[in-house]
Image (cartoon, rainbow, N blue to C red; front, top):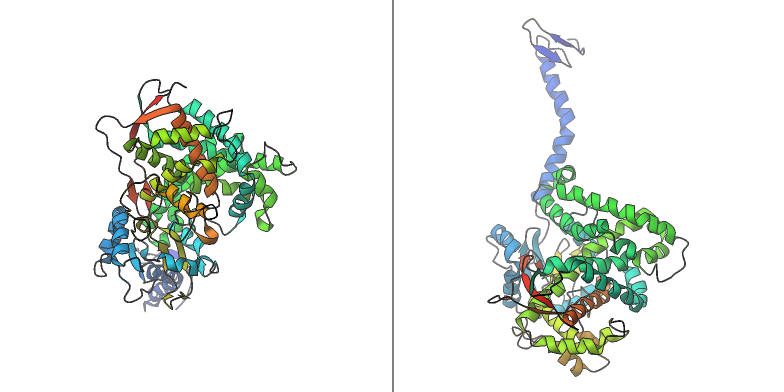
Length: 524
C-alpha cells in the first residue's frame, strides 16, 4: 500500500484527492480518518457552544415564587417582552414586597426588596457586578457599549458636581437657542409631537456639557447623540435572537451593530481635535465640559485620546433618551392636570434672573416643579427595574438568605413606587406629594425627597456606588426645559384627547413617540 498524494482518475474514472485508494479500501478509511481529525476540534467547539447556549446557567432557590409559575416558563419569558409592567406588579404584590423571580428572555431574575439593598450596595464589584450585567444585557462582547473604566462616572461625580452652577448657566443659553431654532413657532395653537420635539433639545443641552458648542451645534454629532442608543439597543436585540456561538460572526451582518461603529467613528473625528487642544489648555468657560475634565483626569490606560473619545457615545446612551422621556411624560401629565400650571409658572417667574435664566440657587427653590417631576416619574419611570447586578459567587444577605452565583438581581422600582406601605394612596397622582414630604422632613432631611435623590425605596437613578453620577445635571436640564416651556407657551390636549399610554418593552417605559400636544406661544 502506497500513501501518495494524488489527484488523478482511476480506471473507473473516479477522482480522488489526498490519499490513493488501494484494493483493500484503506485509502478511503484514511481519508475519513483525516477528515475527522481536521473537523474534530470544530465539532467540539460547536457542541460546547450549543451546550453553553442551552444548558442551565442559574440555580433557582426553592420556595421563592416565580411570576406565572414554574410550569410554562418559556411562555412567561416571552410575555415579559410586552407585559413586564404587569408581571412585576403581580410578583411584587404576591410576594408582599419580598423576594420573587421575574421571567425574562435572559432567564429568571431575582427581585430584591428594599431592606436587602443596603446589604448589596457596597459589595465588591467583582462579586456583585453591575458592569457584567450591563455587558450581558447589551451584548458588550460584540457591541462597544460597556467598560470597567471609572473615568466618566468619577469625572461626572466630582468635576460636574463642583462646576454644576457654571455649567447650567451655559446650558440654559443652549436650551434657549435650541428652542428658538428647532421648536415650531406656535403663533396659533399648533400640534407638536412632544417626544420628537423634546429629544433634540435635550441632546443639544447634554452635548454642550459633554464638549461645548463644538458638539452641541454639530448636526453630525446630534445625530449620533440621538441615534446611537437606538442602534445599540436593536443591535443587541437582534444578536440575542441568535445562538451564542454565532454572534461574533453575525455582528458583521447586523445593520444596527455596523451603525454603532459609524457613530463611534464620528465621535473620534469630532472629539480628537478638541482633546488635542485641551491637553495644554487652562480651565476656562470655553472648556468647562466633560471632555476637558476626562482629558485631565485620565489615568493609566485611560490616558489615550481615542479611549476618551470612545466614552462619548456611551455617555449619551445613558443620558439623552431618559432625560427626554421625563419632560415628555410631565407635559402629558400637566395637560391632563392643568391646575398645576399656574402655580408652576408663578414659582418659575420668582426664580428667574434678569437674563431670563434660573438664577444660582434657583433650581433648589423650584420645589413645586421638583415635586411634580418626581410624582410624574413615580407613575412613568424610564425603567421598571433598577439596581441590576450579576452575582458572581454565592452571596449571603443579612437574614441568612444566600443568593446563588450566576443569579441576576434587581429591584422592582416601579412596583415599589405603587406600594401603599411606602406611599399612601399610591394610585392617586398628587403633584404636591413630595413637596409635603420635604416640608415634613425638615431642612436637614428634605433632600431625600427631591427628584434626584436615591434611596432603597427610590432607585430610578440607581443606588450605591453605581448611582447615576449625572442625575443632578439631568434634573436641572429637565427643570430648565420645563421652565422655558411653561414661561413661553400655553399647552393643552386637543378636544377629546386623553393622556397617551406609554410603551413598555422589557424593563423600559417609553413615552408615546407619536403623541401630540397643542402649544401656543404666550405674549410676554
